[in-house]
Image (cartoon, rainbow, N blue to C red; front, side):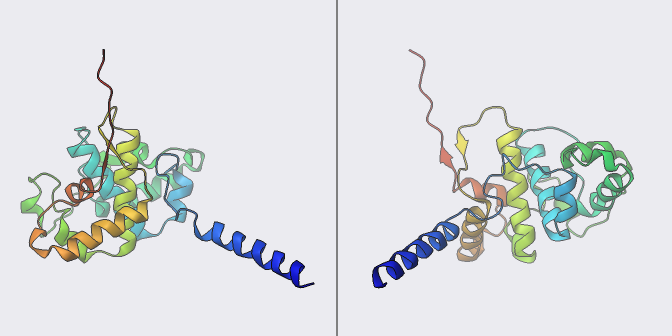
Length: 200
């Protein structure tokens, strides 16, 4: 009986370990589909973060115009689109964004004077003012853009979204003098370089 009990406890321990060792939600942003079903299930903070992350990457890395609206301008428009068009639940948020962009009303913001700078207001100071869910959403959106919208890059981000969020958060808290550094630039500090083989 003692041996059987030991085997049962061992098996149970292995099962628990396997569950704990799994990557947290958002680990594979490339495979995740940020469409209507995701939007309906996400909270307002994660939505806002995702929109900021996608906007930052699409504007300053992909250099594609039309992605400089704020979450305050877009969230209600995107929500309304999915509600009015339930058949479009599989349409990606980024595609809905492009459809409703012209309808977004401008929102005055105290940081508007800094929006001409690369990455706008999305720096360490902004990071420290938003919730962890919005931070998570930002990294989620930025990484999704890097992995799906950038044709070729020497950078790789193989770890989980939450892992990068924690690294960014730790760096910003440890370096308050770099509060003006863009969050995207801070994220790049933790990138892994992709080695390319030179043609013979």
